[in-house]
Amino acid sequence: MKTEFKTIASRNRVVNRILDNIHERDSFLIIGHKRPDEDCIASMVAFALLVNKFAKPVTIFLDERVNENFEYLLRICTYNAISVVYTFPVQRFDTLVICDTAKRALRVESAEIDTLIADPAVAVIEVDHHLGTDSEYQAGTELAMVDRATSAAELVGVIVYKLTQRPDLLEEHDIREIFSRNIVLAIVTGIIGDTKLGSFLQTSKERRMYRVFTEVYGMLLEEKTVDRSGNFSSVEQVFDELERLTDDERRCYEALWAERVMHRRVSTLLLSKKKADELHRQFGWDTVSTVLRSLADALAEESGYLSLVGYAWNPEHPELVQFRARRSKSFTTLDLRDLIGKLDIENGGGHQGAIGFRLQQESISSLVTFFLSIVDVMNVMIDEIVD
Image (cartoon, rainbow, N blue to C red):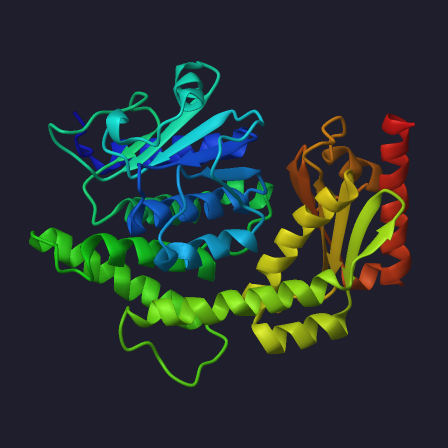
């Protein structure tokens, strides 16, 4: 039987173990219950976006097509390089995340999932708010974020918040923005959907937590809205805003995709200050930075080897030139961290398949020349393995 945490300290220990596993592990599969509702889908998407901040490959597995009313949640995944599949994927996963599922009997059915749970090498993370006699832990309690809450999405929100208190992980993975607009939208959607706009809340604690979360996330969403001509007067407007913002991401993605250039085996995108400023004014930097991260993944898959994305303007750090490099899922024999060593760069980090690094603009006389020199080093590294 699932029970709530007895102390805040015990909950924090579980949350930190979950964050450490996201940091240490390489491939994530997220599942929920059969015929998923708003909270199930929203919590899966929110958790996938959290994993995405660590630049780790993540897949959401659904047993059937979702109601068209929930499609906007899945469109968030499209422009964040998160796979959504309806047949069990063939790739290997070292981490399974189970969202909003009270017990095994309600879990999406798949023999492969049973195999993953039984594998001691696979970490099983559980995020759920169903408590009481009709519930069961599906893989122990070490990584079970199971507690009393308005929704599973609220619990994902707690994990995301805890990341703000982990500067070690933020620095290691170059995470500059934690509560990005899309993760806020997913969390809000789950809270609103599971409580039916608060009408199913029973206790004063539940009502207080619902008010806190909707107000806080509503303010966060407002801060990240490009059009500031008016404020949100109700949480229902979250959905209307989401429709518009995902369309912005599509248009921004298409504009940036057209700028890509293939240099032998490395697919690249170098965003000039002029172009970055233009896109920032049109879409807002949150959308641009989200799409740039997604493009780094897409370009790596296009090349089959590596990608490199560089941009010379960022409203948060205008003095820096920033770079992201990604490795294709099929090209696993190269450790991208070696590139940082070869370039003798101090301000950078990541893991085998994804890195980020930054330099002072004043230290680069020609951005184009410097960018191409990095590409040359990357091609040599590929040649040493492939040829």
